Amino acid sequence: MSASWRPTASLDLLRQRASLLNCIRAFFAQRQVLEVETPLLSQATVTDLHLDSMVVELHDSKRRFLQTSPEFAMKRLLAAGSGPIYQICKAFRRDEAGQRHNPEFTMLEWYRPGFDDQLLMAEIEALVCTCAEQSDNGSSDWAVSGFERISYRDLFLSRLDIDPFAASDQQLIDLARQQTASDHLTLSRDDALNLLMAVVIEPALQAPVFVTDFPASQASLAATELTDDGHRVARRFELFIRGMEIANGYLELTDAQEQARRFAADNQRREQGGLPVQPVDEFLLAALASGLPDCAGVALGFDRLLMLISDRQRIAEVISFDDNNA
Image (cartoon, rainbow, N blue to C red; front, side):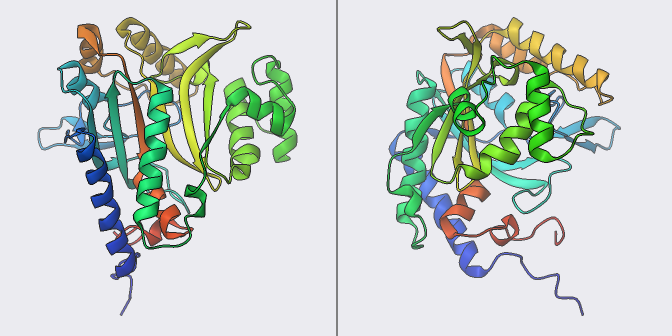
């Protein structure tokens, strides 16, 4: 008889998982951040070219999408006056499987009205270090010292000796092909930047570091601003520890018209690339139009944080059952 019915995580890891959940809830209770729940199913989904949503057919032939993140629904709560909120929930992304990915995973997401991205980074560091210190695993030496902050531009200059804003499209594409030994790749500017980030830079980010000020073309739902030398950047950051992305946060965009423009541009690129055009979340746009408070928000990979704290290399080791055993 097959032993595949057994959990992929040990009972000890499941206990650590429960302890981490308790730590997170205690952290936010102390700071008076409200825990909320929103639907996993929605009528619309993300237009992001790099996210592939899962579709569910209901009994009346209506389609619903399993959320890739609770962001849209949580922003509707913010616009309704919820104040600071957080959520621990399941998220779903098709075609994401591997050592650090599972199509179904657990996400911690929270929003702080009145915070900017700098204040939110400080709170993320406090949360991560608090939970690491409270675990009984001695491998969290990375949580001892302060987390570094470095701009996306400075990171490319220091690691690859190239300015990601000033370099031409062809220079970036040529460098990406050279670094991956893949001359045949057809790449856009952002494809080249993403490839260089994933293959060359991310594995080298071992000590905790917040990477800030991404290119405006990668803003997603973040606000943007001009640098002193005239380059537009996104008020977006990502946290990396031991070469792994842990969190992705924004100073949130509050302009409904700009968000609608970005959704339309995404769908146009999807159509050009042969990807399905996605329905736009009109509820979100209406919430933004009604007045989203100035705020910062972040999505943090709960499973990945547990991997770090428990010193595990595979996501299957920290979830009850991975995609092959569910």
